[in-house]
Image 1 (cartoon, rainbow, N blue to C red):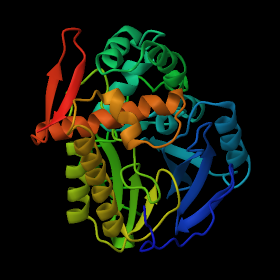
Image 2: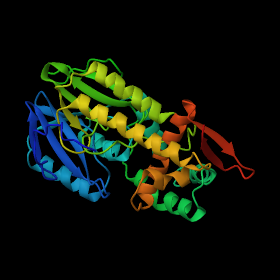
Image 3: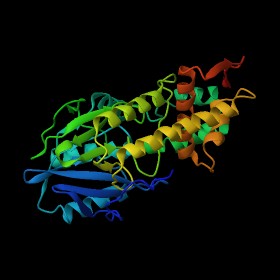
Amino acid sequence: MDNTVLDYPFAEPPRFGETMTVAPGVLWLRLPLPYRLDHVNIYLLEEGDGYAVLDTGLDTPDCRAAWQAALSGPLAGRRLTRLLVTHFHPDHVGLAGWLAERFDLPLWMPRPEYLFSLALQFAPGDLGAEMNRAFYLRHGLPSAVVEAVLVRGHEYLHHTTGVPTTYRRLLAGQVLPIGARTPTVLTGGGHALEQAMLLSAPERLFFAADQVIARISPNVSVFAMEPGADALGAYLSSLAAIRETVRDDVLVLPGHGLPFRGLHARIGELVLHHAQRCAAIAEACRTEPRSAADLIPVVFHRVLDEHQTGFAFGEVLAHVNRMLATGELHRETDAAGQERYRTV
């Protein structure tokens, strides 16, 4: 995507385990991830003699080591006051249990995100393999690929320390005092169930989590638990609401990548990006019906590993479900129960 209209006030991120001041009383901490997307951004908001923590990182030795470096380095002598977790994805909630127990921190989280984290915490070791196996096969993934995705592609879901057994709810429209700040909570679907964002309007700061990122499109997926979900419709509605609610001149502090200015332009790019993907799917399904698995190379033009294949499959199905909802595609089911789609 062309990001030439965006402004990046920080040319380089902080090193893992170090912090950078991005606004008065706001620190940016970056933690490593073992994936193609190799980092996650954590923000620390000054609160009295300490900091409230926005998101936590993945439960890996490298993430814990980076946290330890920060706690014994730039954060030394400052306590942590509470955890604010934006959504259930393991790179954001993965160390919530560890941090909450170690520092006796209350957890604040949107209700659907907390409950889904709790469900994953107490899920069986196979994380619903039979449900997912049937789901993938019904949509055309070859059995060998399905098994690889179930074993290695879902492995990241195990990288969490769980969540505390009690929490405090983050709710859309809520004003949440944090030290001298009183940000408003926004929520949005599509990337997650009800992902939380924080808007500090007087300072023109927008903590966007993964809903708006500068150089990549946030993954918008459909999963076996809710196979008919219109996740892309929810995401596009959220982008429209953000554009209506949040000024264009805010500093966007995203969950990945660099902070930037140019929010409305970036939203326009993301909307166009998904429209182009829908157009590519419509063209591919015009001459013959295709399964969601058939459409993965139509949308993703690179070789994918098992982890990426799971996300790519879910993303394709999100576009298919949006196009079914708008009447652009028609579903056909064969005698074996496999689903394919044809352009109307």
